[in-house]
Amino acid sequence: MADEAPVERLLEVIARLREHCPWMGALTHASLVEYLLEEAYEVAETIETGADDTELRGELGDVLLQVVLHARLAEERGSFTFDDVARGLSAKMVRRNPHVFRPDGTLQDSFPATVAEIVRKWDAVKSSERPERRGPFEGIPDALPALAKAQKFLDRAARAGSAVQVGELAETSAVTSEEDLGELLLAVVGSARTQGFDAERALRDAIRRRFDAPS
View (cartoon, rainbow, N blue to C red):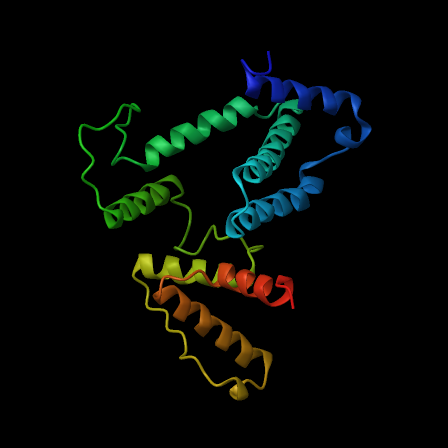
């Protein structure tokens, strides 16, 4: 049964755990936040360190567990179900990728779009979905790590055609305050972005090399 319908079996297992396991039964959306973030970072680490597919499969399962748990909590209060989450995601992917799908979900006859065109169409659809947003920076999670957040802001600014200037990389000796340090870090992120690098990932890799490598 589990092999024939693995998703349905997973949903059933979680439902039973919510009913009969005191620890699972006490979970809330708020209490799950730390686990969701932790599991997402573990997936990132698995990928970045070149772990094998068995480990990646397990870590992806841990992330899926968080989605299933949140959906189960919502279902228990009559709000939405896991199926609603999946259905909404499918509809969003069709809606935001008109270079691949027609509005009814069928495939286009040809797929000539460039990556730049895809990004423009994606941004246009997102803007139409949330017309109440006042600018390109709304919707960026405040809880993002600072380097990733800075890069996201710079990306959004560039895609919106906004002129956001960041300083040139300065000598470390010029940093005499946290404000100076912040400007230096922003300049580092800006430099990384123009070269196609991910500042957050690069720093994680540097930490692994410096502290995890054998002496």
